[in-house]
Image 1: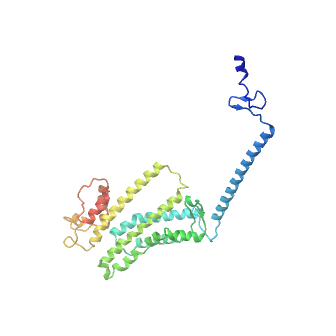
Image 2: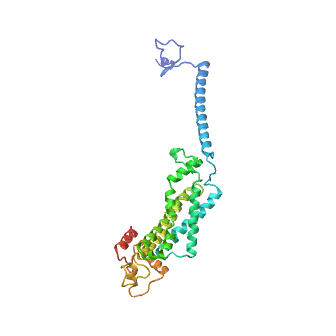
Length: 322
């Protein structure tokens, strides 16, 4: 019995093949050289077909890329060029001026023909020129659309007109020039001048341009996420504190002009603070008081020496607490 087990399983009655070719899972068919060559040929044909399809796909992608890089509409500007990087620095400087000086100017300063007026016109010219550049600046499509660079100028114009053009146009409207023209006439004492003064804050819409610049810089600047988050937080605290101080100072300027007195004025935080002092502080002093209130409010200290006096001021206080 043991000798038969060593010899293997018996051949089935239906097996017509050579003897000794039966395994545990069925008959073992010997592979001939012709069968091996035929299998290799089929595998080679399949790999060749896959390679041909990959080559066709690659060629199609190359043609699409060449078509997107071909300047079909005339002169265009590359955002990664040296010229555009230098222009981005100029635009960023103008944005920093707008974010810091414009709120202070609107809050506590009257529009006058001085050095600041000239600097504002230069900044306006920078943004007007930047609007013209956007009509020639190539852009990249979304990932769903292939992520290709579009150099066709008609498409660039349509893309800008449907996107950032309205925001850029609103930000360059010359409300400060209108305010300067009206303040010396009979309309200078009317509420329309105060409304125009508030409309000058629309310049702050320019700040959204910074997102476009930072987006173009993301690929060329390597900064860790923690450092970037910390810088954003510190910048946000500084900007929010400055803007809240300017808004709080502006509330008094809108409710009461420079000629108002304690006896003939609407009750504001500055009028309450003036009780016992008798003189109106200078613009710089008013901003300092407002910044003191802003910092103490943002840090949830609130000493109580400068407090809101009307509904509008309380609304700003609630906004600061949020």
